[in-house]
Image (cartoon, rainbow, N blue to C red; front, side, top):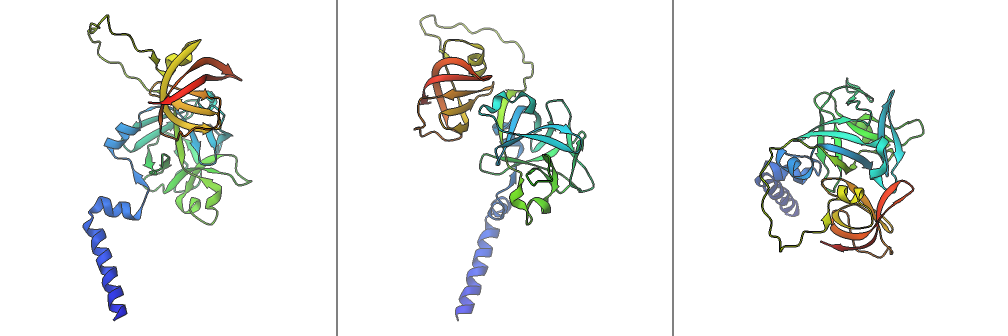
Length: 277
């Protein structure tokens, strides 16, 4: 009797999964879902990014058989030699290093990386990170290999990055926006403004980076390191340095900061106070 109940329960669970529809059923079995055209246009746009993996390292430039790597800086936006250009169209993305070299898997479903015009599959991992996977016969993933015989990043077989040595491979990246790609737009007639209405003093982050003295700007938190909080908007990123570690901000929060512009060891920053927007 107990066996019959157990079998009935299993059958009922299977029917419920099928009844959820193809999208929900797929989500029930996998958290790695390729970005649709709609979500890609809402969440990511083509532009220049620093790619920070879950080992807090970033890929640099194609150098022979590897893409170089470095530990992430206190201000990721200052890593000009580690900026990747991502050309995003739906769930397709082309990757260029800071030298303008396009990156492609080695091909033949082998571990490796090479120069080549190639569209990777952009995968949203559902936790604020993204992965870059090969397509067609290239069942590979762009990954940081941290074993002693490695010099950086390559495309590795999916069976390799998920195998016995999976803790040595880092495939999930936070994408730190440096500069959004811009396209020319049609000129519009200026709209008259009410002279009695005060002009907002909130600058874009790029305007704040170009300013001096006291500034106010706002952006989304993309990196936390003690008193240092990196924020970004659609124009650029910058480090805010507060006077305490005691704050309740998380990645993805939008915050407004006010303080004095400065530069510490080549890192553009604002030092002062902040608040939720």
